[in-house]
Length: 290
Ligand code: BG6
Image (tube, rainbow, N blue to C red):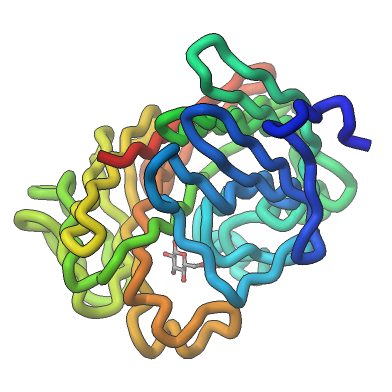
């Protein structure tokens, strides 16, 4: 059913772990995207090691949250403020997306476009008409553009996150720049203003305000920096579940917190956006190794 996207040796839809994935290889990188959730699960620039952290205990496929990679959280981030019984981080991360196109570009990178529209199932959770498109560019960087189209006749408000899990060598050897002087809503302690780089030595679940620019994850253990850039996002989330929360999550290894950190490009808290009928809204982020 996806044969029209195949480019022998480079692009194919493959099946494993009970789910379908778009597999992309080019001279610059290789990647996999699970069609359930439009969820990037692998990205490896040529000659380098994997950028993303994936839980070996993760489930895959329609109806399952994938633990690791790049969860797409939409149309709300975290708990739904009006109804906390609705799914955490919205509902499209567990739904089947459509694969719209795969295109090899002159610069050697590959663009894949996936989309999802409202359905009876989505309207039962959130009664709005929409189209959501994710463009994934697989090049020397991994670039993601998440575009919301309001196809309804009423405005709607969205929160969103590209909730990326980065692979690190040893969390004790990690520091994160880009948050100096920024205040945060701390979900696991008192709110505070960050001074200097972030280091992680306990559970961290922080939503930073007023962060229009990206961040850099310095990883002294793997001897690499992950450079995060972003557009149309004024909030960022830093998350590491640490010991007790790791143990409480069935799909997360007990020691998983030692080799991952989430740094998320978001529209959260005061940064939620109103999208008028017929309008589009695009949030972008990109990740490169150096
Ligand atoms: C983070 C939240 O963004 O996502 C955390 O701030 C949450 O509170 C984490 O635990 C993981 O969420 P989930 O739904 O994927 O388990």
